[in-house]
Length: 244
Ligand code: SF4
Ligand code: SF4
Ligand code: FES
Picture (cartoon, rainbow, N blue to C red):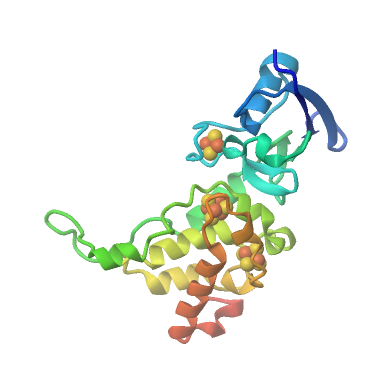
């Protein structure tokens, strides 16, 4: 039995039975190397089986355990309790998304926006006989772009996402720029059309919350700036209120 206990203060909410969210506290025995996700699993298995949260890979790969932990968005599976340097771990779900239960939010609007920017290569020419080649330098352009795990932490940290529910948001725009940057993609004009307009890149006020929030230390703010630059380079800045 571990000597030290840590308090998990978790935002609970079941829309079927609760009028509003509330916090509930659980005491968890702290084991060396324990992550926040392991603490949540302990609560679910040993104290309160009704608590709801998402997780899958437990290795910082799947992006399903993004949540607000002690004042910052983090991946629960990558967050060591000891590193939080607090005896109380306060956990809330991702912001600006409808809570389905406790720490689980409705990601369907997020995926709808994701699909809307066509997050796949659009080569636009006949298929090559064997493969689409990319030089080492062209591949270098994608460093830091392909590591996004779509955890939604940046999306939740963005103030503009909070004030405009139609705003595509940093996670989606980051993914759009990943394909706009790919030398094998030939759909730049279409991508600028899809990400411009009143709820696209020009809604971003370059506040950098998204970059600070990213648990993978990626740069969605820079990606949005890159899309803005591409738009201006093509003389399409006028697209604020509509398509080019
Ligand atoms: S830089 Fe733009 S996308 Fe990122 S948090 Fe700020 S407003 Fe949102
Ligand atoms: S850019 Fe970072 S915070 Fe945003 S979805 Fe991707 S991994 Fe998560
Ligand atoms: S459980 Fe997959 S990223 Fe945390």
